[in-house]
Length: 125
Image (cartoon, rainbow, N blue to C red; front, side):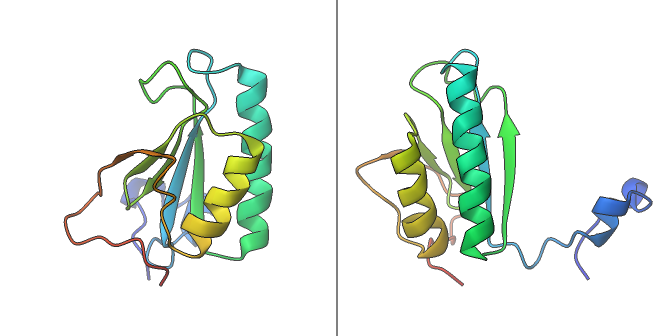
């Protein structure tokens, strides 16, 4: 069984959540400082759809600030620690297909690579 915060065991959605099966966690900054919030929400809707259809165990979280404040929307993939800026619908689709599903970082779009752990790889499990 995966790790569940002790104080949240009663929450129905968290009670079913396990951490071990998830391969990646994707964060998307929706603005308002790095991009127009409508643009961020549009990318978020597409990201949700793309991840769901990919049938890969990926967590996704939308945030209002990743402290870059320009050049967004920003998408960060963990544990790989890869930061993508200026995410368009086309880039979002390609990031999901190539990085999240196939495990290949799109180097020409990666603004920063800072893995969560030293031994992490981007290979699909």
